[in-house]
Length: 276
Image 1 (cartoon, one colour):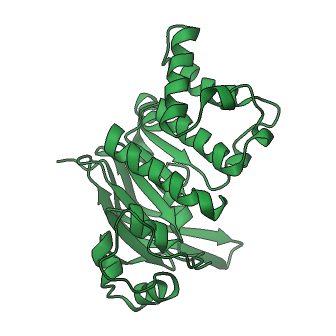
Image 2 (cartoon, helix red, strand yellow):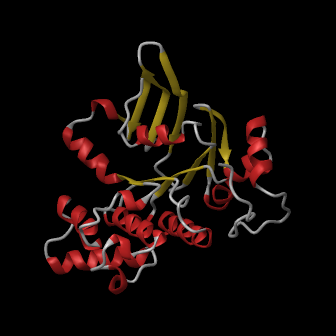
């Protein structure tokens, strides 16, 4: 079966001047199956290459070497029609939702834009129904959200609006880059649980970029750990975190995850602050 997303030997080198080069990714290979829908966490400290990898999976950054495929099609060689379909089916959620909003537009605008761009509704009434349903999916009340400006919502509410925007398009994959790092700790798990429901109820796969192993432990089916642009360990999430083999993985666990026995998988494993 063709993988939904696949990286083959991907390397990314950023050059600054003639002599200085930074290797952000080095020979990274992994794939995401189309079925069943799953949550894959990509974890590591700042500078490990996580965000570069996310931007490459979204087609925003081209590899210096290797290839990125979506449903067997090389992103670099996609036709305009295929790229448009890719943009609909692979939706990003960024770290700081406030940067995505135009402060001069009400929340309605950010939700109506994809409806119009992709022709999701034939009437204003149908568009409003789709928007209401998407907001309710992420735990927001339409009557308390629509008509307001971004600054009138909390950080957690703004992030949920961006998830609702992605849900409108019924994507195959949501690429969430540090989606809860700027949200109050008390709200992080509620947003993480939204991603779980999207996977289970709407069959949307999640690629969850994070430095927070606590939420990764809670939400993920699969875990990939990166260090200095390389994948140092990967596999079933609980197996990796319960019995990490690579010294870097062991250090991350020691810094973040408290030892547990008979842990409830529906609960975060600890309240310790994540590695920065």
